[in-house]
Image 1: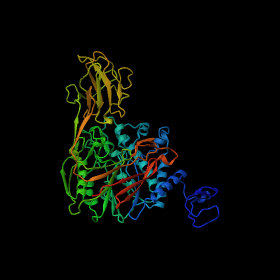
Image 2: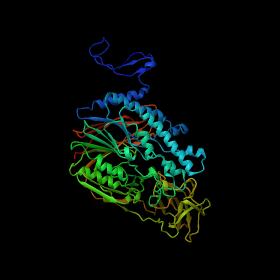
Image 3: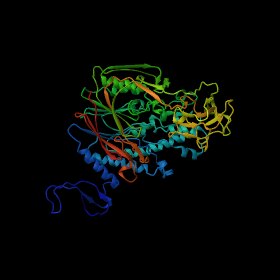
Image 4: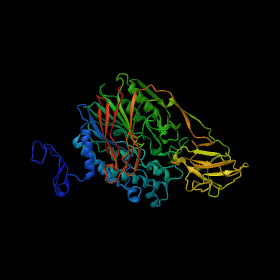
Length: 610
């Protein structure tokens, strides 16, 4: 590259010369021309431009008469408030990164036209506790209203930046977008008013309502369910975006959250309650998957992974709080097989055993006339990993988990106390948010292992005793034990969802433990690991390619193992601040190429034929 001496800011562009210009200039070369600042064509940092141009060049080399391209990013977790209030832990400015994402995508689009840009959700972070605490508000309604306003402010600020994207934007919703995480932690009784979190109508107004494309069809036009598809007629591909946090934002008659009954009392709103309502599922089965002709193929995008792709099978995984997942899988399997599917239930169910009349669903779909359908890939964010796998749909009923342990904990125990907790002196105090277990037999030298129903059901470790030892007469024989206890203490799991305790006090015959919620889903073992045997019945579905993409969040330093086993870190002030994938699909060769801008690496995948 030849650089003309600078005279102000850089005008970035490529001039192609053919033939000899002078003795020192070769026949074809890129040059960078520097012009005065007032005529600068772009304000993007040099590192963004250079990395975007490099990605564009690699993307260009993949093109042929059959390919189409789009851009994808996920899990930005936009939170300027965290950067401003806690720069040591959130060093990278979110506004800068959001602007750089727009600049990089638009720059690539100038070289290789992109059909669209897709965000796979968690566009904004839902952590507002510091601002709410500082406000000193006295009622849940006031705190809730402030939480909603803070989420709307972030949504508006990010949406304004993303409107600068040149290609059409498909903005999926994630489980952090509605603000319900703050709602959960702000109220000790968890009976939060769902009207005070950002709802689908708000999300639609900020992120969807500014799209204008003749080939985009949104379910949101009528019901504000955040599902849409975008047709690429030349390539005969339909891009379908689903809302995996499609939940009713409605409270019970007493104003409480409707998702608080067992066995899912530990969950609240969009943070930990996921699902698909009938309107979206019916739209998917009878509109989105009904294609113009048999040559068309589909790609499907949602925030959460399909449960038989990358999610853990353990019930402790909060992703299992997903209502009507079985209906979604049934529809997609029927589409691929070219068969019919019907579902009729007054109670939607989730893989963790929860049921809810809020997810009642009756629908039928018939793909027999259309024939077997081709799913190019099902793409997700959420897990912050670059992963891909090819497998078949397996209905969840075909997966059996058998405990390889004996659970010593039961809410049916005669000594189990609901709405009670240990106080600092080891006595029992009333507290509607807690429970105290019955007496769990354990002797000196034995090890107690505890797993809670979810991370959120775990005790507030810093302010509550979690365990008290008793002798054979069930008389306390030791002080309350916290995670911070220096002797005879407990060891927390890395995810705070449980702990390990080895009884060291002589005379110990029992322990009692305390936790939050109702106690449903808690496991306690003595001298046994908490492990399951998983038995699977092979599915009868077609092979499907599942793909997960790395997060774009600039303030998560090590983004864990990518698809090739490498750990890629986000680095402030470089293109590695974030991750963007530029996707090339070749429907004839059945190939998908992802060209990575920023942290991560390019990859190549083959998707199965029908």
